[in-house]
Amino acid sequence: MDIGIDKIGFYTPNVYVDMEKLAEVRGVDPAKYTIGIGQEKMSIAPLHHDSVSLAANAALSILDDEDREKIDFVLFGSESGVDHSKSGAVWVHNLAGIQQNARCVELKQACYGATAGIKMAMGHIALNPDSKVLVLGADIAKYGLNTGGEPTQGAGAVAMVLSQNPRILSLDNDSASMTKDISDFWRPLYSDYAFVDGKFSNEAYLGFLKEVFDNYKEKTGRNLSDFEAMCFHLPYTKMGKKAILALTEDLDESETKRLMDSYHDSIYYNKQVGNVYTGSLYLSLLSLLEQAPEFKAGSRIGLFSYGSGAVGEFFSGIVKPDYKKYLNKDAHESVLDDRRELSIEEYEATLEKALPKDGSDIAIDDEQVNLGKAYLSGIKENVRLYSVK
Ligand code: COA
Image (tube, protein in one colour):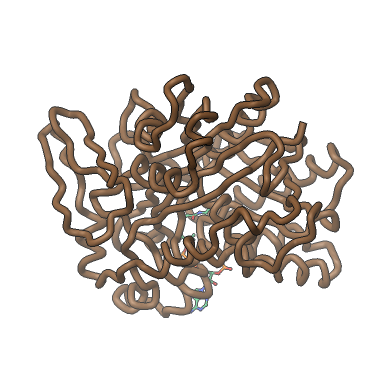
């Protein structure tokens, strides 16, 4: 059965920091952030946005009434969950107006959560061919002010509808995955900020990539020349360049150049948003599909998902005829272009603002001009209150 991505959209908060200005204030050469790390802008989540509202906005941007009727499974990948018990999927199910006879769960494995959702969705559709599944990847990446990870923060969500006979990307039913218990990046329950061993996480990422890609080649008989382009999990966009160099180190230079051509299209959105953890790979895929010249139908795209801790998977998809018709390039460019720049003082205050942790109520002021359709309006008696405009 032909199963894959039928619709894909994203949302990011409407405020950002300019990386060159952040570098100046931190006493760092701006080229380190823009070239060395590869980030131009970084979206910041005001209090109105958490992983649920970000995911709801991404979902609302793609769903129509037929989807709302046919979706019977909502899978919410996140490492920024807002409740230890209730899944973010249940809130999004309500905010997006999806029919009641559906299953909703949240999936956690660092930046791998949305990929787990995709794999589960494929199994579900294989057994229930008329179903549609909503897969979400939504996160707020926070390392804290003046930390090594500070320039690699971000916030946003990707939403995808998976179905049979998809219009954008068919997913191959062969992939290679790997798990190893390591401590490269984690976030203890008490902490709003992630802990990371930055250099080790880079090494672990590249080690996983090489091992799962070798395994994928062995399983499928395919090799690098079978791919028109590659998309990678992008904690920062330079990581994608490191990934291409790692995969092509023993190959002819022309192979590196071929993949580097599409790399620039695949990072266009990510370099303006920053890290969105579990949505990052799919934001890169969206960027590639919308920004690159149209691929011939049948072109194969490689996808590498990595979630610290760690789980990695290499899988692939095939672009469908006329897939560009089903994308929303103009709308996505507007989401990025319509954001307001924060001064560094505003950024610092926004990043450090937190919801009460002692159970007290809060009503969140409408201080931002454009909050998206869905947003967190407050907490009352420990219940989070969301609004949809
Ligand atoms: N001009 C251009 N490039 C410059 C530069 C300048 N003036 N100054 C430094 N650079 C380059 C460095 O050469 C380096 O490139 P390389 O990675 O290709 O070697 C890059 O910028 C980063 O410099 P580095 O000194 O390694 O930065 P850092 O110690 O501040 O750490 C991270 C960078 C990404 C490791 C850190 O931000 C981090 O821990 N981020 C979160 C973890 C993460 O995202 N992990 C990924 C796996 S999921």
